[in-house]
Length: 329
Image (cartoon, rainbow, N blue to C red; front, side, top):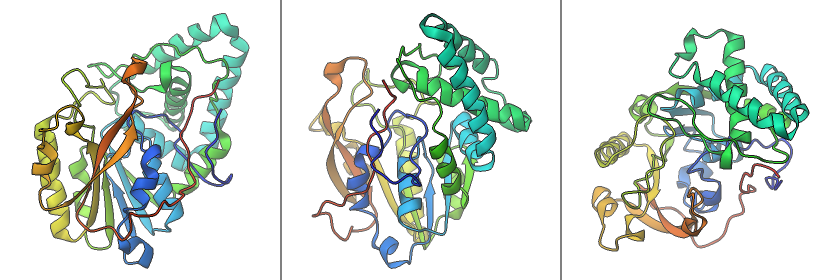
């Protein structure tokens, strides 16, 4: 398994999440607003936190006072809450799941996976606030177990909210990383977690705040929708609504960065985002596309970085100390 290139006290994403931004951290870091380095920015907000690569990086490397993270996926939000509040109980839960998986043997591992998936899905759509503390911990243990043992480390649900990814057949998946869970818990201590649409974060963003927006990407073509991190898709009208949200944050004095797919990858004449964010700084950067069932569809594409400020220096390469998360053998 490839390790993150970081010291043993550094937290990194504990879930593999489609659209994760670990590969773009260098590009983002070079474009962070000047206020981060001079101390005038003290708070960080991320309304589409996903796997949290940018969150873990910026909160640990830049010394900000407090953060707010949000996502529309309730199970994902629950996982951040449990890791923040109950890391040792979660470690014990994952240790049990890991031990059972190891002793099940090759023939029994798939059966265990399917049993955990079925049990997990019996609570699909249940409000986590109605769960006991032990039930919350166990559900997050199931999330991490499924993420580490399912096909390609995907998180995907159907229209009813049921997890539907098949078994992954990894020889030696790392179900428990106790050190990282403890590190992630420390990184979350000064962080508030909210669950909901991006708009629930608007009340805290103003001067002295850096907001990073990483919405579900606009599909590169009509068949490119990845279904789905949550039951609700993100359509062009949602992209328009998000652009209005960014402009409101701008009026409030927040520094904002947004990333998205570049529609010109498929159609050189598609200027949807250029028109949507006219007047702002737009950079195009290369990235790898990993989420594709056909290996031929995984290649380098261009992605957009939109900013309501001019970055100080994008000429040099800044080593950020993180690498791509991988599943194991």
